[in-house]
Amino acid sequence: MLVKKGVYMDGHERSDVVHYRNHVFLPLMAKYKARMVHYEGPGMRRVEPVLAEGEKEIIPQFHDESSFHVNDQTNHAW
Image 1 (cartoon, rainbow, N blue to C red):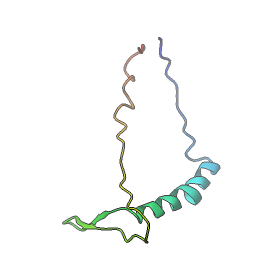
Image 2: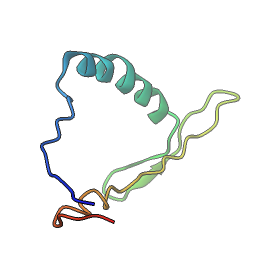
Image 3: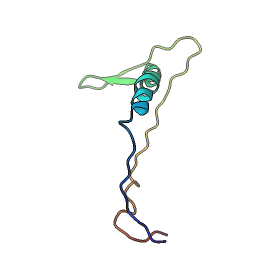
Image 4: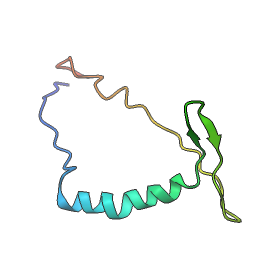
């Protein structure tokens, strides 16, 4: 399969995307962050979240996009 390169525009500055990020996504993430352990100071002191009755701690799982550029140096893909 022949791969044709192009410019990808993600639209992160569009007004609807900015509105969603500021008024939906970030407030929701702030609520989630309050339920996560965090670490403070140079000694990285563990700070447990203060949970309401029935609330569960959120344990984030991060994803590394290391495969993002996997086919950048070739004209063919399999």
